[in-house]
Length: 244
Image (cartoon, rainbow, N blue to C red):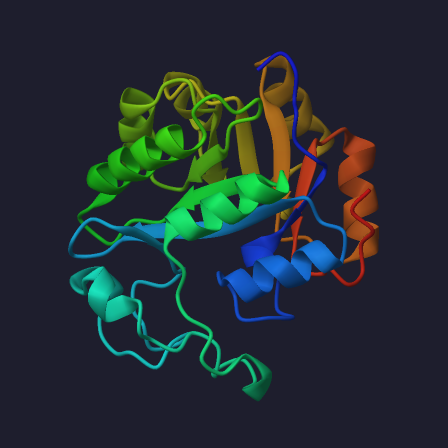
């Protein structure tokens, strides 16, 4: 991408920790704090319908049990994804990806979609999520941004919807980080913020990549990253950082 159309600040899982993550309520709360771009985790149910959830298991953030990907949308859509956070959000459902996408489109918000496959479904999830995203954003001026820690998911997304921009997520350094992102035709590398130094930013920029960071919750660290010339920050602290 010659032009980078996305805001510098991205709300992690909708509104960080202020609302139940990966729910429409979180997105709405993040928006009240002025955020215009949101990050979310998308995986597949047993019937291949994409929905928002971070963990492989349902137990931490819903009243369900077991592996999320083993359930159909008819089963997932009834779960309570809010009570674990606070009584205020009791009854908040798991959202289907399509519902979140249409909310973002209606409000002209930007979306950072982390492809979060269940184990063994890396390629399938990348393919399905990319196809849904391409369909929903067809004809829109700014596409969603697809990211993943799983190269297999990004490769499947690349084949399914090559026009959608992709970013490689990295939690730890490895020797082929630039080559891996280049092979997947990524436009950006999204790192654990601790991995960005003057040298790694220089290498990424020289290779033509945008540099983004997760999850940054301290003002001093945000200042360091922007001073290095990075392009975007994913944060939980939608109440702390002005997103303008």
